[in-house]
Amino acid sequence: MRCPYCAFLEDKVIDSRPGKDGRSIRRRRECQACHERFTSYERIEESFPMIVKKDKTREEYNRDKLLGGIKIACNKLPISTQRIDEVISNIERKLIEESASEVTVEFLGTTVMEALRGLDPVAYIRFASVYREFEGIEEFLRELNRMESEAESE
Image (cartoon, rainbow, N blue to C red):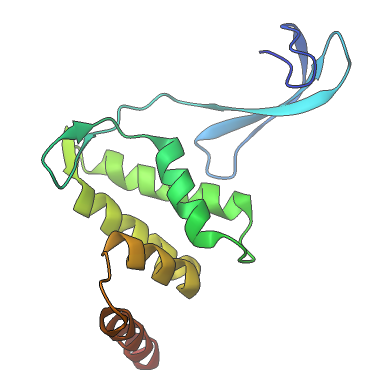
């Protein structure tokens, strides 16, 4: 593994432990050249379904793209990167559980919105406003009112 500080290719693993989700291993490493320490994560390479977009084109699932969208929705909110990683791991688990070679972008978007609804209402509404392409304040207010009535009924 290349050192993020000096780019040297040899390191020593100092500590290994399972990730919180049980689906990864967290390793503390020390560079053999500069002696800086860094963390790496090892995950099983899983086969994710292709994502069928609205225009019917297909693209491979991209964790970084999903992470980027969720980070934007969570920007300046008190949500840790660890919590965001847990949300993404749960979404990925649902994609794999679908056992399909393809899933629609609507399925993925709905799954993300469900996860964000449980995480933070502001993150949810930010993501929903982009995903659902609200065209005016009326649609935005309808969604807020729907969220408020759901919260009252719980």
